[in-house]
Amino acid sequence: MEYLVLPLHKHLEYLQDSCNLINNEWKRSDTARLRSLEASCDQLPTSLILLRDKKLIGYLKLSPIPSIKDGCFVESVVIEKNERGKGYGSILMKKAEDYCRNNLSNLNVIYLSTKGQEGFYTKLGYTECMPISIYGCLDSSLKNHINTYSENDNGSKVCITKNVPAAPPMPRIHFNTSLASSKKYMKKEL
Ligand code: ACO
Image 1: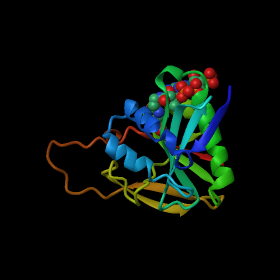
Image 2: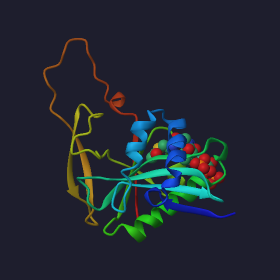
Image 3: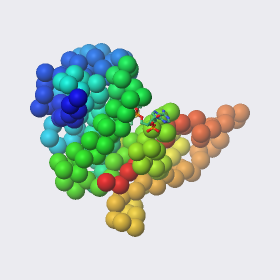
């Protein structure tokens, strides 16, 4: 069998199949999904597809992180439902890492967030990290937190999440920070 991981924008014949695969997992209108898929390019964002014998069985997207220039954010990782548990997710992730190393200069770290698939990413060498925002410095899901960035020992940027000083408390309302985001953020150095 032949496995290929290819950039979607160079193989637009797989556009609709990609749309169907992702929408089977995370429902969204085809129009919105296709518009997002059509944004794939040589620089980020880049959609990568996994083909087995020319059939699409996997997809992921690499997105830029405006505040972390040497990092990218992998999202929407999905394997065709009938093909899960056969190692294809691992193949896709490893080939995506190779793609980053070989095609995206100055990229040193891959970040992601997940809710429930931590075990899969841990097996691939990802470790939990502080939350990052791919939209800017403030993650809207972290209502009580503010993110600032500093450099760690090896020069890559890290996000430090701090509690914002509390506003005057409202009676009988208790904000549980564990509910603010049950997503786990993970990262891997390339
Ligand atoms: N928890 C713990 N271990 C796991 C999990 C999990 N949720 N999922 C897979 N594994 C393990 C497997 O048992 C396997 O272990 P082994 O090497 O010891 O045999 C190893 O991870 C590799 O598994 P694969 O077979 O390569 O994984 P698969 O092809 O099933 O792909 C994926 C995993 C992509 C998560 C798939 O199950 C899927 O599409 N899920 C639905 C969509 C989804 O949740 N995507 C992730 C969203 S998070 C994000 O996009 C950053």
